[in-house]
Image (tube, rainbow over all chains, first blue to last red; front, side):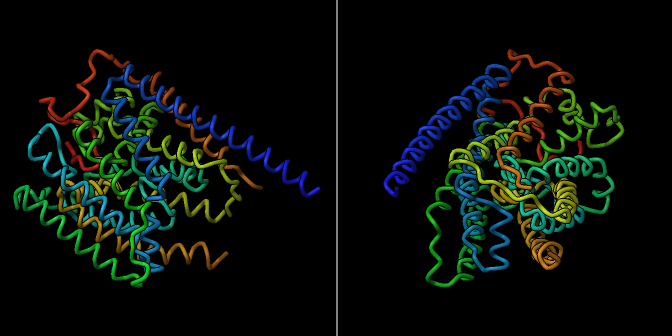
Length: 383
Length: 57
């Protein structure tokens, strides 16, 4: 009987292995075809951008590299591995990016944005909200792409929030802001690289000290993820001419949906600007951030399915749906005020030498300190 | 009730296809012959894509 049962199990395992292998081949072929079709339809640049977006999604989901989760772990458990990996990835991106921005000024631009009242407030709110949703800008896309119910639920609210944020930008900017400050304008490219790497190294060392001596070694998975992300981010800069971003694309999706529903956007300063007005009428397949966002969503789904059959999920309590929706809406809105999320402002801002990236990090981390407590209060204690 | 992650991915794909279908219907058609060079680096053209850090124009 035992022998029969063992034989049946082995046969079932073997069938599953064959099925999984077939699925992987199909996923590989399907993805390659998708990239080729877009390259033929919208140009090689857009095809390459889709491939880069897929790479981001596969790296983030496949190697479990995140932004919101590691901040939460750092705050609650003093586990800073994820945070150190983020700083490592930013440093690895900064070195070639700042150099490239100097030799191809104009063709390539950095994520340089002003520091201001609304920017700091937006980053703080974003940091708090991302801890409630347990997913940041890229995290929401990765979670949605990999079939996480909260991620999927949060995504349309994030889109709505980032669109609504664009409508009120002039009023928020009127609260006051400095001109955009690029470190390379102040210190030259070498100075900007040295200062950026010095601060990242110092911060990394400091966060490393938070952990017990025996647990300080950074897992291999995070080293690989940091290297892959840095490589992809530099490729993104070379192909797109601008750093990796997430929020602009989501806001554009919301704006297009509103526009198609009959809403007149010409009266809003953000959408009446030449570039944004043009992108409202042209295909999403021509928008850089939209294409990498699509790739990120699909890449996360591929990585999740590649690992094996997807686990079932228990339905979430009503309170979680409501809180998640509000937090995602706020997160989208706040990311517009903050000139980006953890990707566009933190990752790309710092790695291309913008002062606002550092200010965003400080404000968003302060917001996360509040957010983790808020989440515990809203969701766990009352359960 | 237990929901499967594969169902969630199905819903997401449906949403994305819906968005792209509307885009195909309402946005200006793409002219593949007007495509920019594969790399912005070395193209000689000013970077002009929409980005999170883009200020109001």
